[in-house]
Image (tube, rainbow, N blue to C red; front, side, top):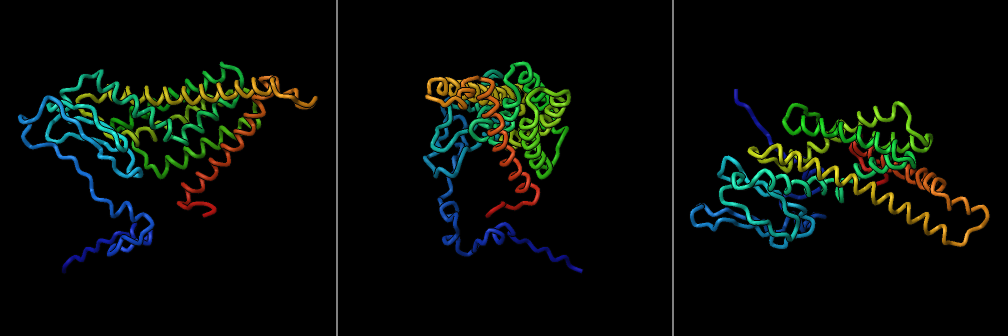
Length: 304
């Protein structure tokens, strides 16, 4: 008896792409674009002390590129966006980078995952900000969220915890809906809110770990890279909160100088303006979160 093994590219059929002629596909530019390949010369002794990789101005849809130096037990790991040139990397590979260098190089990777690419994480952090005008509740929530996602990010990075993204991503969307809806019906920090935020932070940490796994970590500088990535995430979150606070402050300043009717003068109070923005913003966040829940659970795009 012989085994018959069939292999088929179902993704192409699902996307209605003719594999014999990709010129008619909606993404023909991607299929027909010439491949870009940067090769490390085989004779390391012929290299200068450092070498750089130029993206070559590829198409904008190509996005960021992860760089890996091959042929060394401690590989160099880097990241470049479209049209950027990598910094000089030592021909000794990862061994040529100090822990501080690796730490510094991974901070922008974590930051970039929040701003501008982490819309779901941005909306969740805004949901935390919109709960109350007081600093205490915000600190409790941010501390719980930071502690939680740091734990699961570390556990996921070392391979001790692995949950399929098909489970994590819908639950992250649910977390966004929850904090947004609670903001509408509650204006203060409840006893359960920090605990729930902590639980949701565990989920977001798994999402961070998945991104970091795709990007990769240098094995000989694992912890500096992990800490740098996490710090970048924290800086991204603090930037989101700071931007929201500045926008709200500017809104109050603008309203106080604008001509208002007697009924509208209440908006000149920071607390009143905050509540108006909080309820409206939380409602929009909840709608987006519900959209993502449907999209990620049922693998469909609503209203398409």
